[in-house]
Image 1 (cartoon, rainbow, N blue to C red):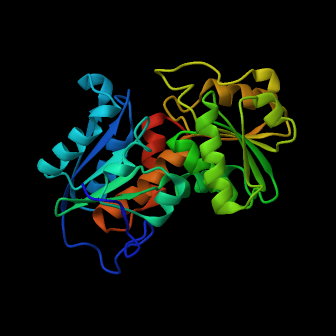
Image 2: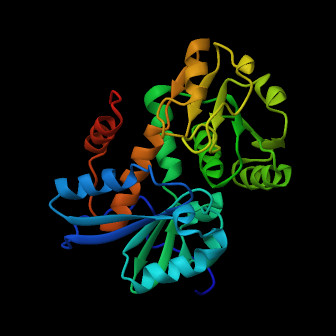
Length: 305
């Protein structure tokens, strides 16, 4: 892999004017504890709906007995095996960056990649989590311009969600993480991009929530493999909105507690579906049907679309 170069000529939002004449793709998902991921079903169903041969495989670090340190070998293996692209999830979204040949401007600014396109043995990284999370907020919460937001989590997903709410007009994000150094690095990145007062780092979620209108949860807590609440439910208030990134299960302990408190909520399925919409378009060059993918997700989870 060479030094990272910006893929300015191919933004993540770009879709060719004419559908790609290709009808077959091989895609993978690299992450930890992802055996229950719905991404393969969502992507392959959209491929079927468009008359494509679309194969999507899970590459689970846990099942393979691997770790983030094995990312270089896994990426090279995917290239050698003829994969057309990879989705990247926890805990690899930041570690993948220095391994790529090119990175889209937005993904580089965020410091996290969730989508890698492979063409002719070369790799380009993108981040569709930002647009995916924005759609969820717009659908379920509405306008958040002027809001102050407390966020739990400063990893790859947290980098995207914080950028999303700031791009929607939130005035400040208090990034809370047990790793204060990681929170400080993310806050500094956000301030460099959105302004000097855009973000601060903290380890105190109670203090961060004190003057916040919204709470973003961007850690693995609540997943089937990491059950439980990421904070004391007593800190929730009816005037807060709560946005979740976890979608397996769709109804997390946090969302249950938030709804019981009277909070407006946005479930992680929104981000899961609409980041997949963006990734599908990057992989195939074809326009995805977001409403159709949301209906399929709802059918898979038993949720209302």
